[in-house]
Length: 479
Image (cartoon, rainbow, N blue to C red; front, side, top):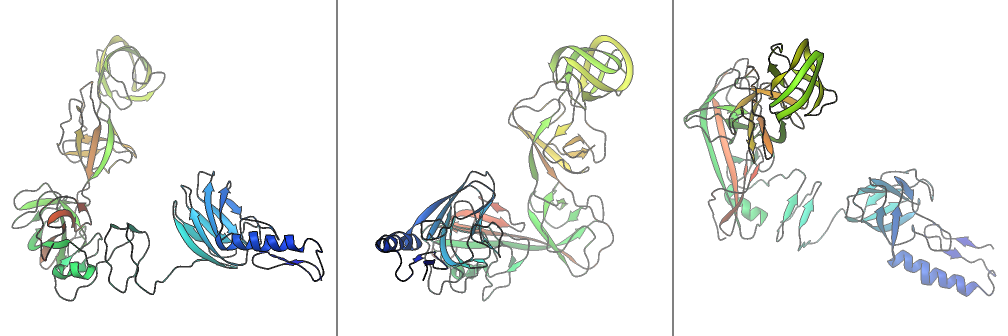
């Protein structure tokens, strides 16, 4: 009978009468090395390619036999490892900075997946089991109580049939849904855009939030919505700018407004306001200011010999003795803001003269749409022609640039200043326009959940799911 190897863990099975004089050595390797590896060894696995198989060997040490795997990588990207197609339990720690996926290979040493795998986020550990085809997450149910003393992060779905008590911090990154309490009819919302029925007075006891109290401000009032561009909402008492509001109706809302969807108050007066679709999109902005320089023009080539102030850039409008009105700089040639040559929009001949350039083009990561509101702020000084905190309107948009006007669809404002400082910020808002018709009674709703710890407000959440770390709170129960 010849020597063979066990199917799953590749132990040496000595044939009858074989290995005279070395039987003890083989047995010691089986018991003292290979079995210990399968029960207790955590082996490092350095991954150097996007797909890499665990090593396998008959009768000697290998990676695939070990109880645990600690994965690192030099790929600078997500990667996959493949176990042999046998039944095996693994503890896997992903010590890399990238997602690792562990599969069962179709063959030992192969990198073709036989079935489904388990993805392991960077820095996380899992307990998985190979059933010889699929790699499956071994822990899917806990029959008894589970106590977590530290912080808990949930990235997927979590279903709890009992009581959840948080003594640390719970960071729910999926879609948290509040429990339905036994009594109460207030409609509120917790970090979602769907209304959730809850009774605020009993929510703390349902969640068992020790030392925490929860309260809600909740109000309805009748609303009159104009069908216009932009829409104007009239109410008895307008909420503050930036407040999240939602609308319901006994009939039909005008086209452009969806029931139970959060919008935001803008341009508030005591009884009227406009609506925006978001609370504001903030981006760092590069604003093209003005410049003063000496230059001449031949055809469509502007040659700059000296720059007195500012920086020259594409989009500036230039003026000076003999310069055709409305001429703009359309491209950089050898110049990049200072001395050099540039392309202009109109062919002409201009002798060397003092030229003034006015700016106004704003560059951002993703330009807002034409007609959107934009407000500029700065940590230093804005160019002359822009006032911090003033409402402007986006015009002449490209994918990453825009100009701005004092009125919707108006002429672009010329920025005359030749200097600026600090970091410039552009905050944009999309106004809600309405069309069609409406019917019934329209109702405006405002709602905010307040969470306080030992009587001190820690966080409030509005209808849009925005967390605000300030405000008043009404406590209840014993903090």
